[in-house]
Length: 250
Image (tube, rainbow, N blue to C red; front, side, top):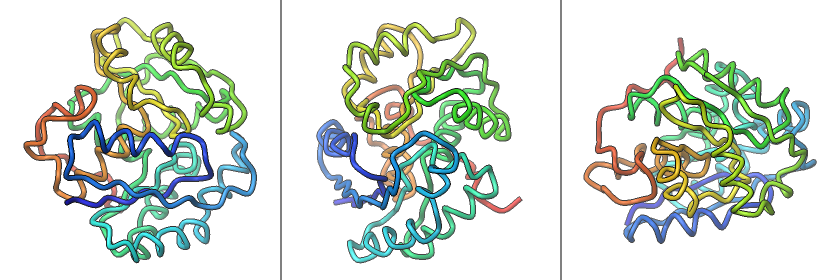
């Protein structure tokens, strides 16, 4: 049994991780530790607090007691708002306290794109535009070309967690870009486990969601992706190509 732990801010779509356990076909445990969210707001100042060192340290210590094989800070906006180096230091803190290989959702997107050899993307983001623009900056630093960005403008994670699945499908499909090799859907507050397959079928291309890449990244760090071949989307069916980690200091 492979156990990968997730630090998850507040409560919105944490049940996605149980859904991924089922979709992965067994042999995987994906426990979630809820970290402190003093204010549920897609605002830069609130997100900097959500991803603060003290908050993540407490959560990572809980994961250490669970003896996880890898740990992921499962929050896209609460990692990319710190910028590249800040997000890297954030992950290092989680690794130190969890005592296991660690990453975050923002870096998981980068590693997933590397695995798939994809460099041109469209983004369908739930966030307000100013927050979504920071994700563009983060990806650009990784050498990813963002061809289009759509911002849904939703102010809180709780609202995102309550989105109707059909509305999510419509939002993502309508914000594809013809030249994009993949559509990225950040925000771990969004339920996506059962939407990835229909989205890829409708778009005819890769779709990467925040909870999906977080789970894949954790399994990758735990050495449990090779030969798996099961799981939602092209990412989980992409084999076990070596991914060059971007987490080393520059």
